[in-house]
Length: 467
Image 1 (tube, rainbow, N blue to C red):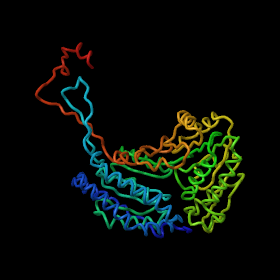
Image 2 (image 1 turned 135 degrees about the vertical axis):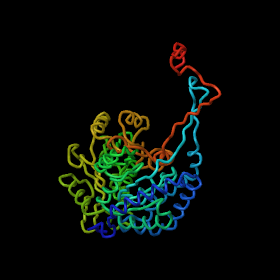
Image 3 (image 1 turned 90 degrees about the vertical axis):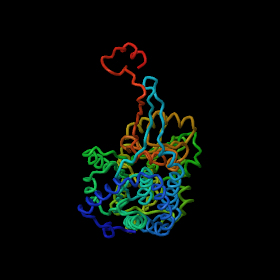
Image 4 (image 1 turned 45 degrees about the horizontal axis):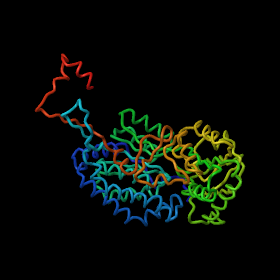
């Protein structure tokens, strides 16, 4: 797949259409229909049935856009979204129920509770790397919370983008959930509209633009961004397992994953064996002719390809390094003896290149990680206790000890970044909360009216003792 012009299949929508659509969504939300729990559950079931129905078309579209195998599509795009829907169907009634909170003695006989109400009309902007999952996964949270939503898929994944619009039009009322197509121009128009919440997944640079636009109306945002996620291989690591799990984390979607291990920090005593095992793991999973493998994707477009190819320049290629611009193919590539100050270490790679840096003492690793922006993920291979110590001295959106990527698969864990790698969390109940207003309510009876709170505060000495 070589994408010269992503807008051939995806055309910009007019500003007038977008303004009218946002207005219509607001009217639908104002009807109160989405606040009904049974309505939300019914919409989630409809979405689940549609995903199953369109699975063959989803699989084909993702092959066309990113050369994703049917197995990878199912594991990373379809099943994870279906599991999220099931999790909400199972728990939504409980999550949405008002929750009582303890009342301090000085407020009695009042009582307190939290009411979970939808924020309103949501804007969901999805990226191209997981263009189905990262469009519909947040939608599950929006539906679950009782919001209406307008969704903008990525123009750089035009096949799945058009299919998403087809699915939404077929299953949802047009002013309840809607899809708008387009490129950066459409995105800018959308960001000029007033929404009640914006959910954006993409780069940190664009995330800043989204946040600035949201500030105009003080709109809450969830920003799922990225960063340089380090992978530490300590001398106590099981090298066979570490190599296999690192290689797997790097080849999924050809490394175009926000939580992919970005670079490896390996103890000098185990570096050579790790490099050998990484090479063996790549070969075992993808075969000796990786370009022919059905389980290895392609770079999304020429611009991304050229950026990655440029990062290879001047680096010491230990293994891999094969590129073909015509087919947008870059093989998994291990880079040895990488200088921490080199260009490849200054930005998120977002591709199948794996720089390797050695260390002698773990404090070197901690210092290097803390000198950079806070990453979306951090991976440590070695003794669990030492891994926990590393986590206590660093920070990241999520982490794994002796694995990669798997923090995203547990619906009971919040997913999101910190600082430069993101703002806000979602997945499971956290998705429900991301699109909800937690409304604090105090109910006070009228059969008694305690005089302490009123001027002229005759009982102030007593008040000071209990407040």
